[in-house]
Image (cartoon, rainbow over all chains, first blue to last red; front, top):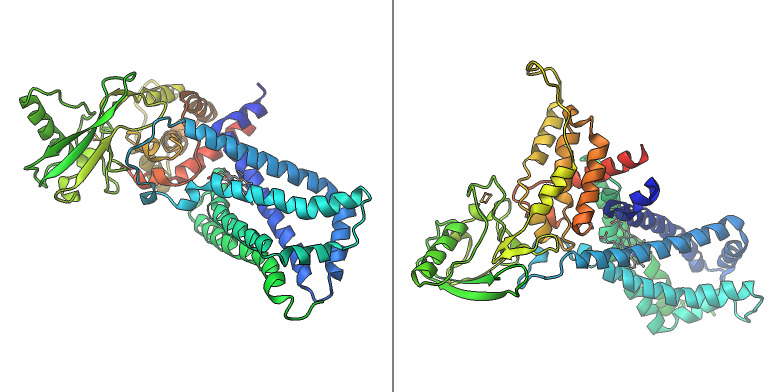
Length: 228
Length: 246
Ligand code: HEM
Ligand code: FES
């Protein structure tokens, strides 16, 4: 085995992959969120339209999209594999166990919160990525614009509340994940770690909330302030 | 005090185990947990029943032999103590106390509450030797070491290898142990000649033994009787990356 594959097949190496892909996904969240906020401009989706056209055609974005897909797949695949391997390390469990005394529920449910975020992503990609972006690449034209599709999707309460629930779980995932990634990468320092932990806590609350605000806006506010 | 003990009984690694219930009266709150087990065992012997087996040696919290999962916690409910240093006053009168062995694939049960922890010895061995100067005794302070580094090294070296972190970790990960052992050498100049091979070999052996991988839940740090910090795990990760890219 070459040193590289040896590194990344060891237990520490697999965790490094989780941390690196996790941090990459975090950076993607920021980009995605800033795009979403264009939806809230009172211009009937003009700015969002420009943005989505840019995302459809810009070569850098198209390359990053592939990297992003790979990032997700590697993160989710390694996450499942790690969880399975770790289960195997304790074939016989305890009759009485009190894990709540020593660790947070967020840290113990990473594979569950991650899985639900994954399911959400599949549905989310189907309704926006496949039905619009892929469709437009294939020359299928929709009479409705992406903006109208967003509005009508989010005016469906089931869709929106599922979105909101997924964001809550994403928050749980990040609550542990954000600071955990730094620890995994060996970035633990008595000056900076408390700061990273605070930043992670704020990030895991604020970012999912802002994400959830967009669908909630279309469900609850948009109609009444008289869009169309 | 009066308590009800539920003790895991298992003949050997192959057989199936189960809990046996032993009501115990006249237990002094000042007894250590192990003394209480001794008393219950003596009463079993008097009744011609087989006493249960458990690991112990120093009974002063320095050897790491005692290894009991008490009421769902490694070394019982108190922070920063081993089972031998735990006293019955930490329990309520009339309480039911479950006692189980450490549970992890690399720790097969030998008998009752005793598990085989030789996996740690193999991890330590895999770390290899530490080069030393032979010849005449060196001057005491020939190598200057910053006080903070010395403190961190001694904190890491205070690991008694009991296995509480494996027992408490949801992944049965041995990272806190390996990280403490790697740290105690890495933090001192004397450990530097074998700095890279040591971390790589110890991590490889840890994986080979079948321990799970760390997900930074922090359970180990919370249950460690020596309160060893998970900042050591970050150091291990750092050393692992460094050794790999060099
Ligand atoms: C936007 C989506 C996601 C983001 C931003 C994200 C972020 C993170 C981060 C930062 C970590 C910490 C890495 C570390 O501990 O070193 C992590 C860990 C993890 N993630 Fe994700 N993740 C996402 C989606 C998913 C998905 C879809 C799964 C699917 C199963 C998943 C499963 C896991 C697991 C099992 C862990 C390891 C648990 C642990 O180390 O405690 N994640 N994630
Ligand atoms: S018997 Fe030595 S640490 Fe408990």
